Image (cartoon, rainbow, N blue to C red):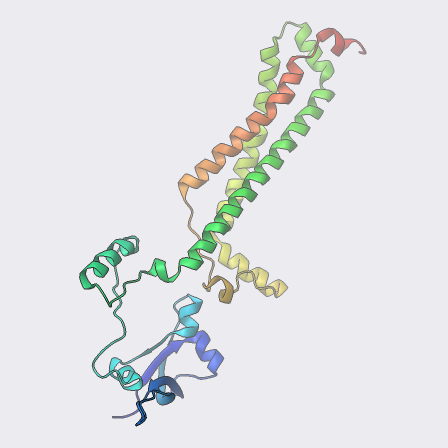
Length: 276
């Protein structure tokens, strides 16, 4: 007896303008057989009292999910003692596909087994595309930085032509001059990588406070939950990815220094000192 209880997400409660203790109506379509044999679709509603609010951190759940007693749901949908589905919670979510296959083989037709990956396949496809695009953008940024190193070192070679000529005249080998500029390119790249990694890790670990600050100061939503599904930006720092990016950036800085270093090494001491 009595009015059954319901628990809904906080964003849904704001959309419905209800609070704990207030009543909401749940509407469900039902099929009723008539004398002529037709099965017209009708709608029935049942009142529920909001007993609590939850926040799962995922927009779909917070705006579309409502928790009610099993008996009340069966009454609302005229399902007697049956259910429309059973959820299985795993300790390791990465085993979902394997467990899904075992369940499907065990139950067979007409039961259908679906994992959380199947239910969010479009979302994961979008994430895969976004990750590929971000990888390309990162590579382009590194290449632009490498070209900057090339142009900077070429300018240094042009400014230090007299000094390079003196070194060569004093007996320095071409490889010795080349090493100077290779070291300079590596040092410039290493300094840039160090600063970049420190800033990147700091931003990644504090991305949500930064996003909140930007949203409060500018009024722009950095990470809208209705588009990205989550109420906060999820971050995970993978050591392997950081090491790979750092290694590629250092390699690019050294390779970028090869042309200026080779140009400096090929300077003829006589030509370098001719106008001095």
